[in-house]
Length: 66
Image (cartoon, rainbow, N blue to C red; front, side, top):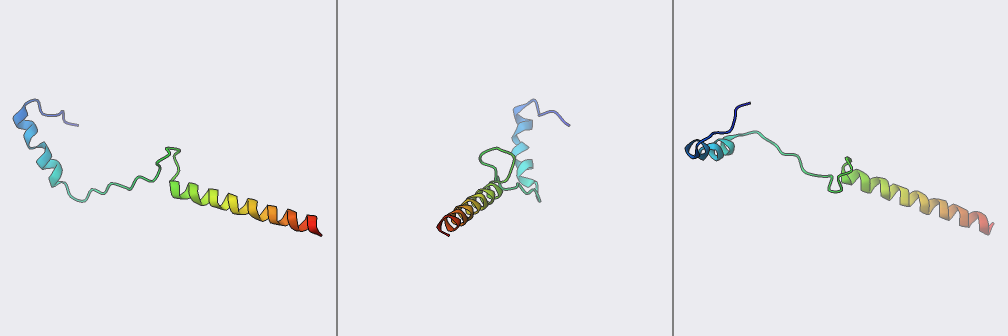
């Protein structure tokens, strides 16, 4: 790795060189809560857990009414 330039003149073209880079793709940030898992997967898991709980509640009510 090269060190950063020491003089202002050398630093001046750094932004030009960065701007000239092509083909770099920065991935979308999808872990706003920082737990290491994509937030859309967290939402899907939470939604599935809620639906499973609703289903269990419905089954219990049905068995109580029988």
